[in-house]
Image (cartoon, rainbow, N blue to C red; front, side, top):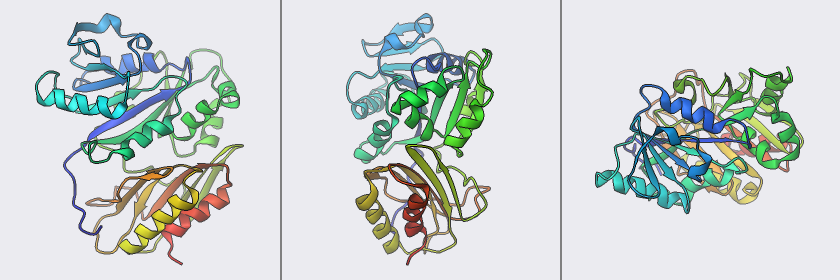
Length: 324
């Protein structure tokens, strides 16, 4: 593993999710209308779910539409891997315009975990893509009730890197933002009225390594009834053997309950950190980076899990960060 080299720049993929009626399509329409959003490929489950028809300029085939701002809209009617590969192949043949970012809009009832897993099931064929972040639209009016009734809404919020609070021009519970922060203390919370938000705050043009630790201490927890999270920081320099063994043990023992693990490790022989990123039983190969990101003081791991306690999750993460 120490022979890993830095890969060529990857195409960042933003997953846009949110429960039914949370404003995903409205947000996406306004994002694509911004200058500088050309060279974006948008993948959606059904064209009928995307209110972009008045932007359509021409159709290259039944699955891909060229929007009038130069973006691509691609319908996902089968396997996501095949859709992503097809876009690359058609770009190389000149059949579709060049794109340098991808946005995947899920359906309102989608569990984001399988979407994240897709990028780990076939890392060779998807080597030019990498998850840049998960953005969740959260309905300020109805979102709290959706959390209590639907596990999909709960996971959409728990896994978010960025939460866009929508419909804030309507009367809503004043404690909504605080409840979002309680359930996901790592995510940035933005507010958007009718989808109006700066694309630079939502989308990224470089893959996200991991969330910044939410605490300056050694461990930090967030939890509610079903889903818990923990951020653990460390100081120890690790060997590649330990990283291999510890990640394998983490996956084997706790993969069924892990929704997401990501973070940065300090590994012997590496000037910069090593990024770790996994979803349940599927982990990317740990990836060395050239330098520590600004504001990151040392190694850390963020974990999100269900069916356990914050303290137990912290123990799982600490076993990776701190060799016995």
